[in-house]
Image 1 (cartoon, rainbow, N blue to C red):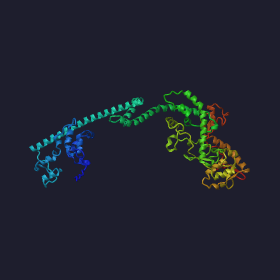
Image 2 (cartoon, rainbow, N blue to C red; image 1 turned 60 degrees about the vertical axis):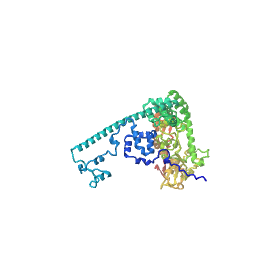
Image 3 (cartoon, helix red, strand yellow; image 1 turned 135 degrees about the vertical axis):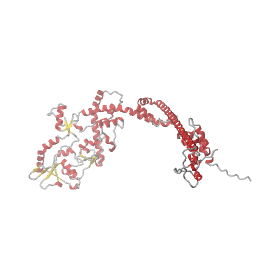
Image 4 (tube, helix red, strand yellow; image 1 turned 90 degrees about the vertical axis):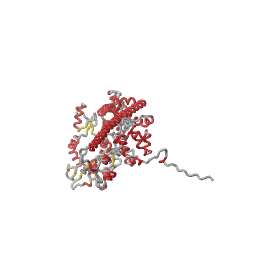
Length: 588
């Protein structure tokens, strides 16, 4: 029977190889003199290099017993390192306590206390367990010899320290020079590779500007003391390409901005000088016209392209009237779609002009102002301020897109294009329903024009006065619903139609106060010239037509030469109080 095989134990990971692997705790067991030499002469960069290149250093990491010999060989191989003095070569036995132990205790002074190790404490006995004495003799051969040795040793240490400092400075300069040389070679190699990939022209612009060149040299991919090979180039070239692209766009941005701003000024002048048509009601601004592709095609050309101002002005004049009409149609369609999307009952009723419904009111969610049509179309909040865009709803530039052209257009106009997204339409309630029923109108169909033609007079039953009735027009009654009875129960607010003698008396009183009210209204800046964007009071606009457009005041016609701005409130007839026997002109 064959003998059984003995199971052979595999060597552990710590016993593999010729040397014995020592755990990380070896550094704590290293002699103090070896550690002193390590941290005195060898810098961290040298340690890192020795770890990769020195077989002796790796042997130190694997076998602690060879530490002293390895470090002696390492230090001896360092070029230019000053030789260590005998004091450093025997650190453990050449310190002051060893010297003091050789001196008789009778020559010590008890005035100076020094800490001693356990070895010297045992030598001096129990009388002075933790102290030694200085010399009491000031002269003598022993004292002189002691001080001569100390002075020589001190000067030797000082000279060695200065030599080490000079050696360290020289190595630092050599290393810095080597690092600069490696960085320069890497930068030259990067520039060569960028030139081969088509960025040579952009590199010439970078080298021509000191600031750009300095910024390029500080890039982490460039400012590195490593040799560049194909593998490292594949890792860094996407970031370098991205930097070159951004630099190219930034370099061309400034002259392109100047060219676009000059062209926008010409376009803005043409828009302001364009003839006004009262049928459009309100007109686009520069930011609205800029978003049309036809305009962008004329303006958004390279800054190096010479643009003939006369040709540009001629082309813009040809297309501008059509663009203004097209913009007006788009805005009206957008506004109507916005209204129908908020009222599902009216969404499919194409036979109803939703935007002109007299019963609708509109609330701006930005300033919380309540408006009626068509005042809402000219509300200032519909052009959101560009500088306040982070707090506004998300907006874009339409057909223009987020390009340099769009960015400069918004900066020049300081606003976004016209948008009705922040306008919230409010449907009528029972208060308004009762008012329209008294006037014989359906709030789902009645328009502003229908009620203005009817021109009925009503009074509020909830606001009955002791001796008279508060008579008002439908517009005043509509505002009365929202201002005086906003918190009342909608069904409790009822209206009555004024007819007969009371209506006649109310109209006579309104007529007697009309001239004064109209004069006050005409002094407000609600009027604009149809030949230019001049806005002022009615009298100032008439004088403007005579001074600027050479139209005599007698020939100026409202609706042809000037008209009331769409964003201004209409003329309001104030309510009057009608008594049975007399009339009072007191209003609300």
